[in-house]
Image (cartoon, rainbow, N blue to C red; front, side):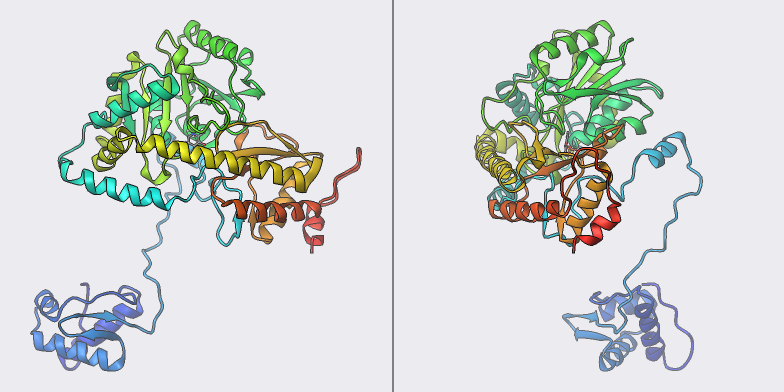
Length: 497
Ligand SMILES: Cc1ncc(COP(=O)(O)O)c(C=O)c1O
């Protein structure tokens, strides 16, 4: 402990003063356990009697609590939180990479997060609260722990997990691969980062859907890609609008377009594969929630149709289990395997083996399939509930996009310009309801208001209440007649009462 005695008076009082100073400065915060008198005497080269006397003195003054033998705790009257010295980021970015990080990423303002203090949130991309899964996961971890080697993990991932993933995606998504083609990664996030590093040079062109998954956009931008947004309609990305000459990489969500929910049609799948083949380009297939097909058999993966090894199929356990697991996978085309595995090695040596072992067992035991069936059923019910509640309470003010899978819907508010939409989001937040604009999903945001409405993080009762509150907020902004000009958003937000 960093204590300076002031050479003034009896040693035990000098020590008591030094400890109080440390408390006042916040270096010894409330609740901190002090070292035993024996340890502190040894550290400061004092007699134990001196330290015991200092502790007794502080105890009498109410600065510490607890007993000799069972430990003493700081109960200081100062509430100064322990603060690390303010860290200032270098004024000048230190590299081109850091310049791009500053330009494109804003980690203080990540879209889709739940703001504090909200009662309801149509948050998307978060799995259902599932206490049974948590309990099961604890058991899987305990079962796997004794068999996990303490040494560095296998770079490519635990063979048992790669095997389990290969069989699972083969069976459920039609992905043709063996365990040897699978690279275990830290979620889609790391997958995209590794792929960008392996495939892209600064200035390379990358095509992505417009609208798209904003995080994928940020990763690509930070790696120096020049992005081309390709519009999406009810059949997914309009592949005939891909740039000519062909781009190096195309990022798509074919099974459940993020965020619109469209499914890429068979013809477009074939056209996209042909585009990549002719241009010697690559396709990233992000299959983030393709397992949650509510009404029919899951749509098969694009990778199934790939005869030329141009598709990198990316899957994640963030939606099917939980995002803090930070596990996902890339099914690698043969030409990129070595580079991707080497990139993973330079990044982190390999993903944590305990979680991988638990997950391998969870999948092979059949528990994962059971869990997916259960969750898919519940998600289908909640999607239907959200849809019918919105229709009942908001009538024809909303245009809800067709979608048969996943954990969110997209709803456009008819005749509501963007500024009014922003005022609606603010008015809802004042009433403790978090709404999520679709705008961050665009390179060129549209001139109308669209919302992404997640339904996985709310119980059916909460969905009903949240929709009722949403309808009240929406009623504060009466529908415009054709040609009517907008009133100032501020006025609208304030007049909402
Ligand atoms: C389109 C899309 N892909 C992937 C993910 C999952 O990312 P990760 O596996 O890094 O948690 C998300 C999460 O919201 C997503 O929306």
